[in-house]
Length: 239
Ligand SMILES: NC(=O)c1ccc[n+]([C@@H]2O[C@H](COP(=O)([O-])OP(=O)(O)OC[C@H]3O[C@@H](n4cnc5c(N)ncnc54)[C@H](O)[C@@H]3O)[C@@H](O)[C@H]2O)c1
Image 1 (cartoon, rainbow, N blue to C red):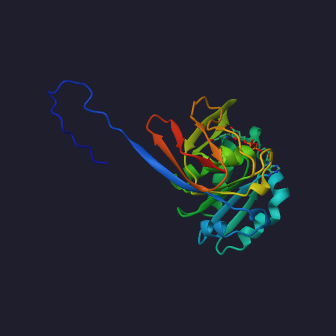
Image 2: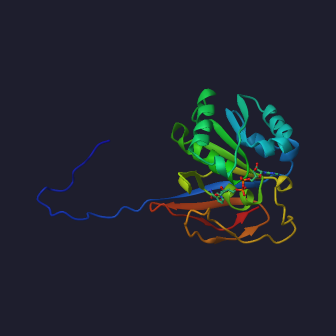
């Protein structure tokens, strides 16, 4: 780094100016019915030519393991499927580290892709791991719970618990994409034909993010991250 001194030492101390940094992030949320039977072109497009590490939980594996492994098997290139014990009690740094170790063992490069298949916990852990591996690699989310599909899986945050503090450490790291299969969703309280609920884009971390309207359909999602660490999804989130 080159440091350029533009002020003279004779000038008084004080604020020189204020830098404002903001970036707009965009990713596609794609309705992808059929994922649960193990075939999908949106999945193929997302993973094509990349080394892929897919993470899921034992419950999701018992329901969709066959479909998920056949999704991976239909792809060329190195891929690995890992079933890890996940749950609120496992939402901690050791699980994130485990995902990072698996990625290291298969030598994921900067084009490598993590895939999270599961609820909000799976999404949080994989998002955080992806934000750190090689200083940030892509990840794809396939949320399979209602919270996952209307909130955790379509936001830009990932966090885990530390020392009993909920979502204490985390990151802003948007997914490369989100694939939603409304068929394989836990808590299917709102069938696709029914107007879904309002959801709060908040993961109990105290941030008072704005209310986000949930609608049925697909579309790109835009989010802005400011320097202050607050995030806000703009526009509609889609399930
Ligand atoms: N990062 C964010 O923006 C954000 C936002 C909201 C919530 N969250 C986090 O999300 C977590 C809650 O997520 P959750 O409610 O999805 O719980 P969860 O991820 O713990 O999943 C609940 C259980 O359901 C199982 N499961 C997943 N899909 C299933 C399916 N289709 N059928 C049957 N079982 C299935 C899982 O294996 C798990 O045992 C919390 O830790 C919360 O902090 C994060």
